Length: 290
Image (tube, rainbow, N blue to C red; front, side, top):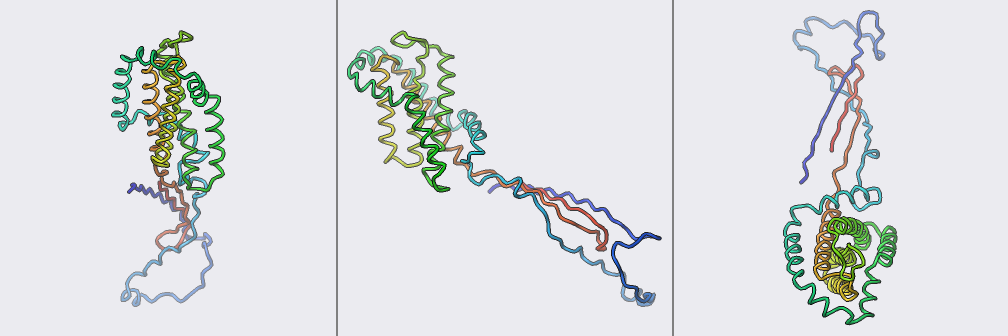
């Protein structure tokens, strides 16, 4: 249960009746109270403050119930960039790093076994997993998802697809230009990690999270094929592919977890007219909750 913090500030400005100052409201003259009656009846009881309708800024300060909105897209993107370093990712990161190091011992063996084994397979996988195909596909799904019913799985999944692709692509490029590992074909020094593989696995992870293993199994199979096609095309080492898969898994898990968290509580500021204990004067009550 979320904690609720209630802060109330009340300021009362009293316009008191004194001397020749005109009263705040018209009063009917009445008989002078008897002193004996005052003694027996005691002091007069103050009337409670009259209630008045309050004005609040609910429409101005509301936050969306669902985090997956267009207005929250940049904020969610930042949360996902930071969320990758969550403690929940320590175990998959350790496993991925260990698998990458282990795979490096089989780089040459795998390259000899796969290189040129199926040129059509390699070209197909490289094309499907490339940016020229992935960006339009994910972009079209994202746009279609904005027209889907609120709260639907397709709407949420396509939102997470776009977030995962952006976060994965950014971290992959950062590592490429940091590590600067030479490709097997010697074309450049941007071999580690495999961008095709990292994006494919991040999308497969998001799909599995939203639709379960009935979609996850073929999605991961396709992502694996894309990774192997990069080895067949002599563009990546096995360890590049394993490292890319680990990054994709971590980012996909992070995006679905962070974007799926409940939206923050509504922030409300209310302004309420108030009076003093005797029902006179004019005041203002301010209440803020978040």
